[in-house]
Amino acid sequence: MGYKVVVAGATGNVGREMLNILAERQFPVDEIAALASRRSLGTEVSFGDRTLKTQDLDTFDFTGWDIAFFSIGGEPTKTYAPRAAKAGCVVIDNSSLYRYDPDVPLIVPEVNPEAVLGYAKKNIIANPNCSTAQMVVALKPLHDRARIKRVVVSTYQSVSGAGKEGMDELWDQTKAVYNPTDNQPPRKFTKQIAFNVIPHIDVFLEDGQTKEEWKMVAETKKILDPKIKITATCVRVPVFVGHSEAINIEFEDHLDEAEARDILRESPGIMVIDKRENGGYVTPIECVGDYATFISRIRQDPTIDNGINLWCVSDNLRKGAALNAVQIAEVLGQRVLKKG
Image (cartoon, rainbow, N blue to C red; front, side, top):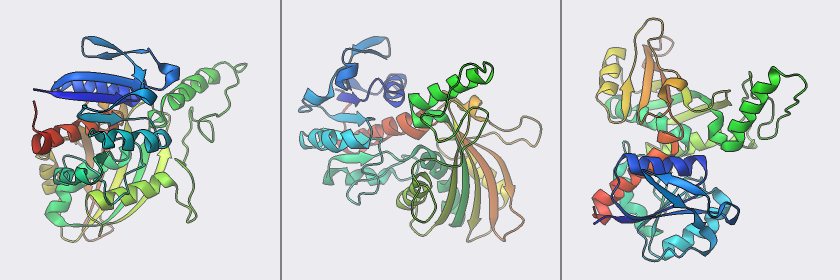
């Protein structure tokens, strides 16, 4: 016996990826519904070898459905997630709306799967920010061994993190560079993204950090350990898919780079590609379509007593969003719902 599954936001980048991953991982689905806004009503989406027509999110009855994956943004989620949860359907939400709610678990299955048991307070589980998800997968096994005191992270985030509009803008501006008559001013981003980098993701806060940077701090503390000190600089780069991070970690205890490499090699969800030679590391374009979080450039930081540097790359549409959501559903099924 399988599950009755809903994907809300099925026509978006992440929604389509959720459908792909549900099929790829053979999640036990008895019935599936693809939901979208009325302007996308009837749009066809793929689920394995099947084609689904989207249904109207506004009029959909969630009664009798087991799990709903939401990727529709924070504002509409305010309306529809409580409606689904009240009907008895467990919501796994990809927006930031519930991530900081103490009654909603925020889960990365390789890091804190036990937190899934807290879903029952609101019948909602939150999926973390894409940049947070891949980072905590890398930090967790090292934290278990040597206890992390402080993390300094700089991100290099692809335009797909800003949705289809972001990808279209990079494509259009790149073409326009070679066609001077085709003016493509910034629309989604604050400055030209083609052949450029923008140290600004989400809105600015009063203390000077952006909300994206604040999210990484708050979410890492909630998922991994509130005692860890974290500072982040988040940058948008002209890459279509795949987020990269340069992470500097300070530990309470000494951790040798060779031991760190061995620990990461044995950890779930991680692939270590770390050769000290030309090309002996992973770049964003190589991680597209893969489930793993890739770790490279592992090395001692000689400027502090117990420091390690590493490079972390992952497909943000997969591990950073859709894959993590499906993994949450798998944990929910194994530990709570127990169907399939």
